[in-house]
Length: 316
Length: 171
Figure 1 (cartoon, each protein chain N blue to C red):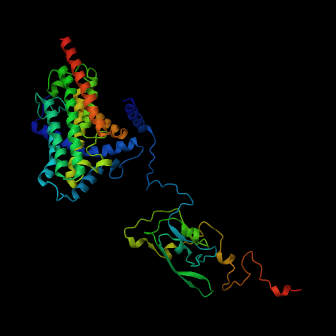
Figure 2: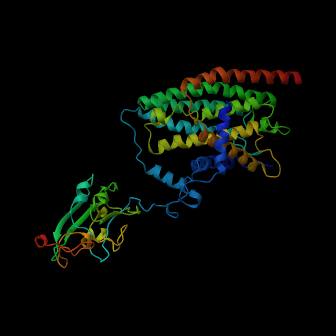
Figure 3: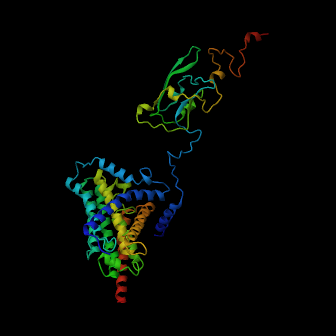
């Protein structure tokens, strides 16, 4: 398959990622409603699909307010960071053979680096808001995302060992025989949990914890700045879901349908799973979250890495 | 750990359950006959107003949303000159209905009273009066009350014997 012009790929991936993120607002509300025996938004347009349009018109009309006590420049730049870092990660995402913005040979590391940079957005937002709730939210986010980042990277190293490459298309190609979810099942579970924590979704939404911290790090944000945090979160969900599909479920590989369709099916499956987890699970206490991350998940990730390494060595 | 997976599974099973939402504008909810909604003033079987402007409803109203002015017609029947309910204040508690001695004021199973302007929620007598008798058909206060009005003398009410001349009973 010939690869399209890079500009086409870039535009296509950006547009698809943004629209997916926007429509995820609707998808999430409908799915949550389904699992709570409700209907969700079904009034605006067919199946409520235009709810997204209504919401975006509304959020653009909102007053874009910067509190006088905030650190203005940091306050403005913080929501942009989350947006940029997530969008950057999409650059290394292989949608189908040839459809990729940039086939870096360290694509996986790039993804990890970008998701780590995303922490800055939350911490800076919490710091610059000059508000105790926002600050606590930002601190929590820093602690949580850093500790879950550690084993997120480690959980992926098993995949890298098996594939023998950091390049994402190469990892997908290495799954021709068997999806990595089977030899790397612990790694998959660890990455799933780390991904949930990375996107700050329920049950790992302690940085925004409505019941304790008003809205956490984005308490002071309104209008489109808040909207950027919101869309950034949904893009993060899309990103992590597609990463799971690429790393553990063979990305575009699959019979009958073209690669893109398989990729979208797998991604959407995991997006739905994220929503299901949100519908089902409560938020843990913060110290439980931390001790779980360091005392359970990190040793498990290390053990997984050790065992995988040993097996790969013996095999050769 | 297992309980987490079980929770997720149970929540997932909800995708096959019936949704309990009532799709309101298309699908009306069932309102019980005694539902306390929009307040009306009913009429007696002869078509006259039941309200005798006794002010008991206005006194019973905990939010003071009822205002009325009593007056009398040529026959000596008391009736409200104006009767005003401010539905933006009304809490639909039903105390006015309980207080009413003539079953005139009644709450009905209707809540669709949305307005764009607050002023439109102030209902005057012509908005409140209905043609029917509401929940108490056949009841006519003036026919059962002992009060004397034009066209009905003492003792002419239903189930009422003409007044007895007590002196004639003397031996």
